[in-house]
Length: 147
Image 1 (cartoon, one colour):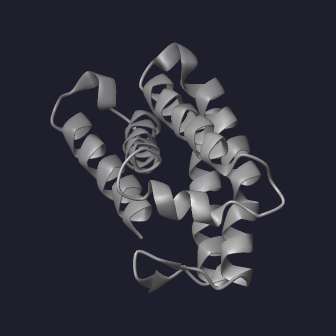
Image 2 (cartoon, helix red, strand yellow):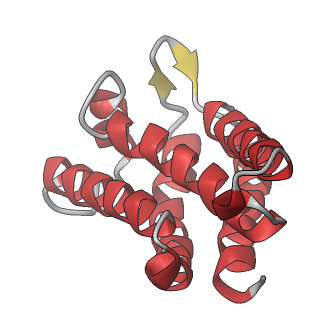
């Protein structure tokens, strides 16, 4: 739920800043870019901090080197977040992040099917996680192809 809150709060805050005169954030497209960037900073940092062990556990057992996969996806998320903030690279970054989210979704399916408990709580049920993923991918595609 934290990524959704980061996306919505980040976009809303950026839009308010745009309405208050911050030209770089004036419009829904730059505000959504800022919200997505905040979301990916949050999720990217988790790959190296408190949630790292949980994210490694979510990697489907059939995939090799789960620690490396979590590191690489974390670097891609953080790099994508940075690229979202640069108008010249934002559209490509958003498209790449949408593809990355689709590529990582099987880990969520695997975790739900294996009924993992992460940080003392069951993983987000697959239906809820799927709905959230649709929102996240749609936001990234709106940045990639909108505005």
